[in-house]
Image (tube, rainbow, N blue to C red):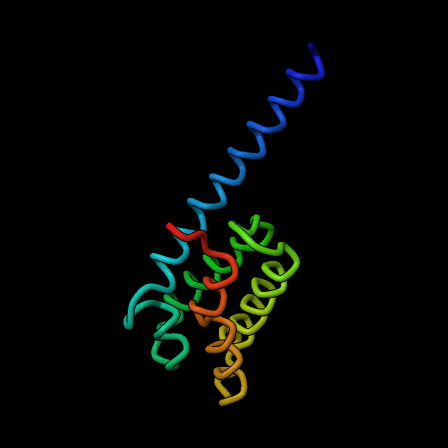
Length: 120
């Protein structure tokens, strides 16, 4: 009996953490990535204000440690780490073609969504 209660609690905790990650990721995508005038679009074009860049950096950093909605967790973690590193480089002032290209590649919605976004 105790084992089944512990198991049920573990499942519920796991599901609630996953749901929290889903809500966080949805917020990050809407506030940081969606649209041609999104903070990410502005950062990639070197048009973002320092405040917009900071807000986006904070949002992106909050992705670290989240659970992949679907797909391979290791691949998801690598994509998140690459995104964080490339955004950090640009946020710290590296606006070279190489740095902006790396950020553009790391922030490509379709490549990540094809592997890790659930089909609705």
